[in-house]
Length: 478
Image 1 (cartoon, rainbow, N blue to C red):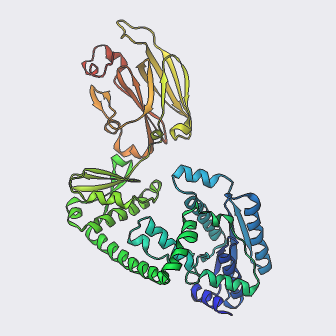
Image 2 (cartoon, rainbow, N blue to C red):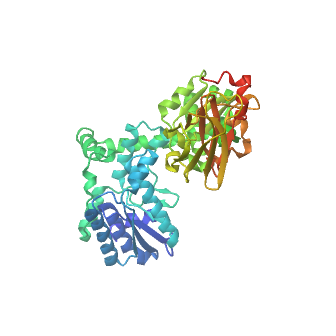
């Protein structure tokens, strides 16, 4: 057993007998060396070894399939069971576009999901990746340049949950030396040279400069990261004691919210206020599965230090002052925020595509003229049938009609009073609605159409009342 294999064996921990390890292998030098060393260790240590390779569908098929074939060939040579998981071409790019993230982040999401599916299938103890000390240093530099706080600057952990990085104290030079000794070839990903990617710019442009002008930068950077890890641990402990968030049901957020005492918040040091907000975002992500875990920018969080602020949007969340508390809610992105409007000027059938609204089903609208009544208003009255799936509702209004995004402050007349959507709907059922459409006619707002688990149409007071109800005079536009 050489020094590389000895180090890897120590990183796996004891005991190893009877355990199943899943090696995530790309075909590159690091993961290939890890797989080779694991195969050499398994008989004596008594563990079982499986391999998984993820083909991302981002590179030319000839190149990515070549990687997969190389991994399969190595596994056959080492007698290691291997599974290749291919992600359909374009799926990662579509996900990145939908989530507003980079291609690298989207690829990581699909890769980790594939790893975990295979881990559960075979009952593996750990997923092993080939991250080395070089990857650790690159990651710290990336986070410094992105302005990360103490927790972000802490070094990449060797073990987290089911993920184990057994080569984290091994350099890339150690890896290449081991592969040369064993006579094992490896694949080179052409995209690793593309400096369009942030990590590659760090690797090929910044690090060579640091090596030339600051020879001891690596040890200094790791020392900085370790200090930041201790700082982050202390701040998290102090924040939890001094600024504890409490969970509550919040009708304005269509779901759960968090709150803490306003007085306690503004008495705390600025760094604890910042950390409290970040910890609240993490807690909210756990409470609301749809909220994700995207963090707000630290520069935006810092602006909240002004005790005169009333409300602040912080990326995926909103922070507000309410009745002596700071309330943190996830921002519900209504599908209608994408921006749409539909003008209806005459009878007929119309369709709003579900994709436009973020609905699973299309919205169908049937507009039919009503018979003239005595003293009709100077508009053509119309009956609207709105339906989606098995749900439907009616609206009585006047041409021309506009279906548009619901906006903050939209009110309809209900019982002779102006009412917002949240004033009308039962607060306990708010969570079932994922979007709202507002219907307008020349006399103002005619209805709210809400959708989610079901469709609901909330109309204003009877359109026939328009002739004589004074409340409508302020809404009438001629």
